[in-house]
Amino acid sequence: MDFAAKLDRLGEVAVRIGLGLREGQELVMTAPIEALPLARRITEHAYRAGASLVTTLYGDDVATLARFRQGHDGGFDTAAGWLYEGMAKAFSNNAARLAIAGDDPALLAAEDPERVSRANRARSKAYQPALQRIVDFHINWSIVSYATPAWARNVFPDLNEAEAVEALWEAIFAASRINEADPVEAWKAHNARLHDRRLYLNERRFSALRFRGPGTDLTVGLADDHEWAGGSESARNGIICNPNIPTEEVFTTPHALRVDGRVRSTKPLSYQGTLIEGIEVRFAEGRIVEAHATTGESVLKRVLETDAGASHLGEVALVPASSPIAKSGVLFYNTLFDENAASHIALGQAYNKCIRNYEALSEEELVARGANRSLIHIDWMIGSSEIAVDGLAADGSAQPVMRGGEWVL
Image (cartoon, helix red, strand yellow):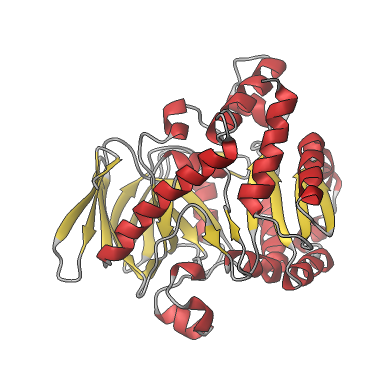
């Protein structure tokens, strides 16, 4: 099968599996300008599915760098609030949301970290109204990826650019199940397996998970009335979607005040152009009270100071060490892929959807059940073939969930 056919398949999977787009629905899409070929395939499939309108907003790395190198210092506390207000209005009117990922992970590595932090904080605040419609699953949404040259060079630095792009595409197609005889049916079968795993966890109603392994002995209390999710989800507009293409995780919301112990990262975290390696932190009563990293420690500590919720957890996810992404041995420098290579935790904002009957609960009630609040949501990997996971019942008794990084079902 040639590249054009695979790219078309990815566009079809994005619309049919990722979004589950409905006839008459609008679609708001964002993409790097280099991803134009995939954006066009997705647009065609969206209109075939009955989309009333597809609106695409393109980002340009060159323009982003121009801001940091030529912009006046006072401008880094500014964000396009008018744009995000428009997106929030579109989502309020039931528009679907699709993001094509492919940005250069090292784009801002040489820029002033304080400016980068200010710009991201301003954008996060402005984006909140739109983002809340997404993370609360008011609408159907998804993320897919495009192998841009800059991204590929970071992933495969020993190859020339053409070879690196080809290698990254093959990794994306494999992880996204595009190489299967029928990708749509393959995704349906994969979703069924993920649904079985989350059903297993929801039936047991563990009060906490305990992770143990080299450098790690961490107890993650789970939010009151938590619900495990993973694979395809039903959004509040009644449309079934796959938020991430690819995905290998089942996940839920921890209790923001019930995380204790030490944990060591098992894979590097690529964050805004900085590779943070060897993360080791200690939690007490839900908050990180010690934080270290072998590289990128100053960036890690700056992240933890973003706001009051940045040093608490908003997600815990289980991924087998034998996942296709883990077996590929590729470090993607992209959270969409790297988080699906290992079990992980996320600093910051919690998913309300992972609390039972969240639609009927007030903000105060959600927080009382343990949902964390923050401007950030940053996943980092803590799982491996050396990590054991136990489910802890309310009486403290333990049941094996993962051994050697694999499910015990």
